[in-house]
Image 1 (cartoon, helix red, strand yellow):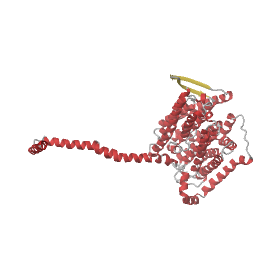
Image 2: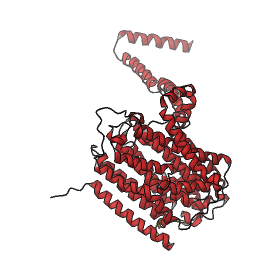
Image 3: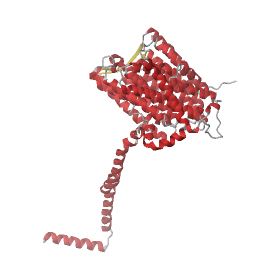
Image 4: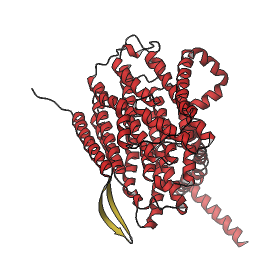
Length: 575
């Protein structure tokens, strides 16, 4: 019997083995407290050396372990999800190029080689977003790549500023960049904000859902959107005591509140999960701006596990129901797809920070440390509101898709029979349950000392319970609530459209330039330039040649006219 092994299976095995190798080496680096640096000098320019450096410390190795694990699961999953696609091999190569770009960015402490991975992520993400050739994908891809180009320009300017230091290796200078280097810190913050889609660059993240679902599982868990957070973790020492920290705290708190609010008014399954990713990115950057980069990295790893699982479950559901993404067309899936729904519930509970799930260990610690820190009242309220909104939209998603009434077509065939998809989710399901506890033991052998009052200690659980009840009960009364919401239509549209950010990032940004271009085309290109340009010169030369041609026809009339005109001109000139 001949076994046929597909490229997806080979890639999955290779990536999982690399994940195990990086994980074991990372654990060794944690226990030994050392790091390895491999440096290759390409050439020297005056006093600056252009070098390619690979840094192998516990942060980069642990992160790469998770990137390889999730990438392998996604590639194996896409073997079934993209089976009917005629260009599935091209899709696989794009995903592998995506992983390679992320590896270049993670393993490099040098801004120049970081730029290679940074630009690679932007370019390959554009190719993946426009993978389905339609107008929606093209618009989403253009918004994605133009938003990310802002961060690319900020990285280029940062390289120019750091050239005066004699090296672009950030771990040489992160601890010594004082307030004189405030512009460099601002540029790095802007680049991280664009990649991690913080306000005002948030519009591209839900738009990027035009890509295939396996891409979304990879992009929104451990690669593209986490690149900005990872860059800030690496430069966290340079941000200590800077005004940039305060600005980043305000922006990230507003982002996680805005994303949680928007998810409660969204009906697209993938966009709801994308907005939850945006909210969690705000949580990571907010705790990093308070000076706890290790907690941000902890939440980055645990979030990658359950968010990839949640996207893969959403992909199975969308694949089974015939391409529907509107949660109002789903319902009562637990009777037809118990295994997928179980994984989906596990990942949703981990997202909410349910006790002893993966998200609980990182998210609960982040909230308690934030409550214990010296933050202002507004940031505290945004933390509490965002926590409640997270549970609220999660319960709303559960109500519409899992436990609500069956709203699908009677000819829909739902089942968990696709072993390729369900098997690829099993490892991540285990990680979503126990990954947080294991990471907590490994990364924090010495516990954080949390000193809070009984009331502040119980605020998180009270807000979570309240948010869950409100989210579930409001949607049980959805018909009545929807009718009442029409009286506040403008407010509902504002909250449900990410505070008009998609419109502001697309139409409003280009409206004046497009209108002025249209006016210039009409008045200049097709107006005066034509009148005095191509068409005018053509008309004048045509008439001139018509006259000259008439003079060469050997006509008596023409000769007489020329003779009379010549005589008149001569007489006028003489007399």
